[in-house]
Image 1 (cartoon, rainbow, N blue to C red):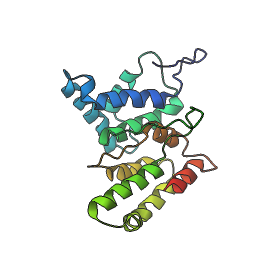
Image 2: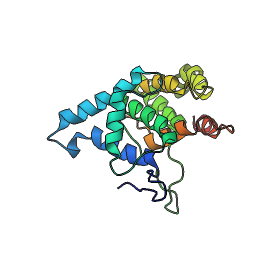
Image 3: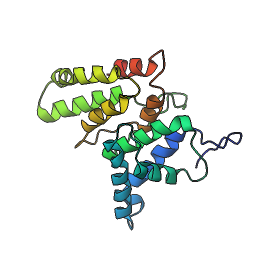
Image 4: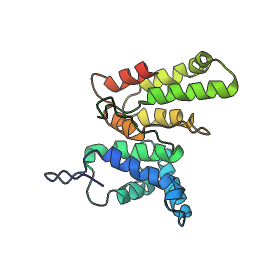
Length: 196
């Protein structure tokens, strides 16, 4: 259920709403009678990967159809479109776990997901995790140093590394991080580096 801010009519936490609905698109068990429609929607999301910023009319159509009862604040749109396009290429999600008091803190960062990916790849190839990480260090450093306008291109290449695995990504957290990427304090980049 969407939570609408009654004062502004904008959806609160649109990244969470989007990810729950995108996950339903990826789960064919949810609607076994229309699996082709779901595959078409995921293919439409992947069209955003062919652009420089994730926006494509097909992506916008899918994303907009998922927000029926409210609108998304314009400042959130870019991150939502980029996250949706990236999700289309790797629809495996991991959800954040509540802390000891039952409240959800931050979700899993992309740095943590990449660390998990490197472990999976190393064990499947019979390699040391350190060797796997060393092979990716340069690309990860370029990702962390990316200008907000170039971030989507770096994320496209990074998410492509997950292809063929079932290592999940916390898509809501990634969308939130994309939205906060330009922060002067670079807290997203610092968190990813720490989790890596």
